[in-house]
Length: 93
Image 1: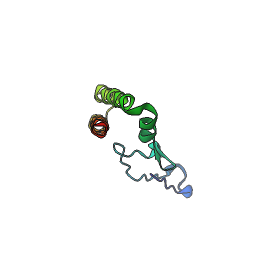
Image 2 (image 1 turned 60 degrees about the vertical axis):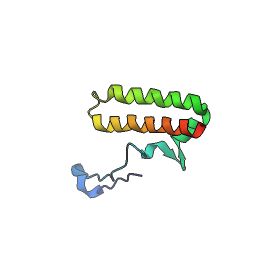
Image 3 (image 1 turned 120 degrees about the vertical axis):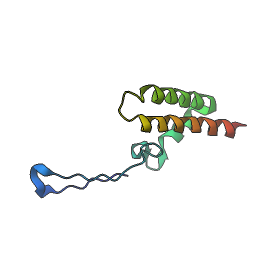
């Protein structure tokens, strides 16, 4: 999880140092108490609902990739959802 370090004595020039988090494969804000949000969603939606969820997120990331200023990151996220769709389908068969 990213940590924030700061110097209280620096006044206006507070320096923040963030560890680089993997925002594609494991964003820290999607894991609470050891439970990944995506696993919770998959369990609650079931296989077909979950795959539809993955398709929707794939479409979202592809659509907005050119507008957010993080095109490569968004396309990697889109690929991540396709990979989860494939994994779900393979586990079903």
